[in-house]
Length: 393
Image (cartoon, rainbow, N blue to C red):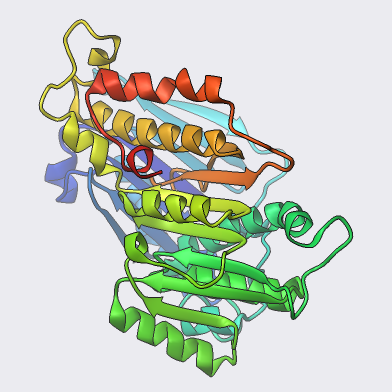
């Protein structure tokens, strides 16, 4: 039985045959137990800038593999319940198949469910209302990536709770009604994460908490506020506002940002630093700032960095990585233990880098020598660019 197939390295005929300039196609067995035969598989096709998802029958999925593996796409990895088949096509169109047996077959659904905090089959009211789950707790097929994303972020929150509690409540203390855990979600959007975090902390971990979501979209915030009231989440609140101008009454213990666009991430990190936030979980998005400044050949030809400027896609990725590396170093200078981690695999989202920063305890001052010899300053000077967080803290 076909479990999944991933197609890459498209041939010149891909657009003519499939109708779009796809760079990659993935097909996988629908993980929802309620899926009918006509909805047995899910297909996601990627162009350079977009992705398209549709449902396939079993016959359609198998036909797509047969007609395109090693033909329209030069590379394909097909997984069944008993083996993995790799298709490799050379320049002459000859296709080679490599077979690898799977000794202990694991279904796609089992892989998805492994170690999840929120389990499929256990209804979570807010996720049902937000369209991620059905009423019986099954995951809506088109929202499975969102379900995985939510669970991954909850894992990161769970990982830092012990350190945050120790800093907030002391070695033997605990959160209570007088001292709840305080979380701010900057750029909360439709608030999948905000609701899930509140549910996880109050219903699963039994931790008193106050969670606050901020976003620019008034209609979205009103909808989220209505949902919070509907579920009786009295300590889950929302407001319309710009991260760069926000001034809260209380200092949050944890600040999270999930895909806060471009410099919005910088202002969220600035707020965290100014309010002595104990932990930061930030997944940046759309790091245009440095890329837009180096787009006019600002780097000299003899610079070691010139090699990254020759090709647009490399320049864009380099600029994004440089941005987050600079952010990480700035947080370290301010006394945080920082890790740059994979948020979720690249097949789920290309925006998969997470900045995890936890305040170091007993740090008296920043090492000025480290500050003066900071690599970030050399990079910024070499590129001839400015970076918002570096300028505003």
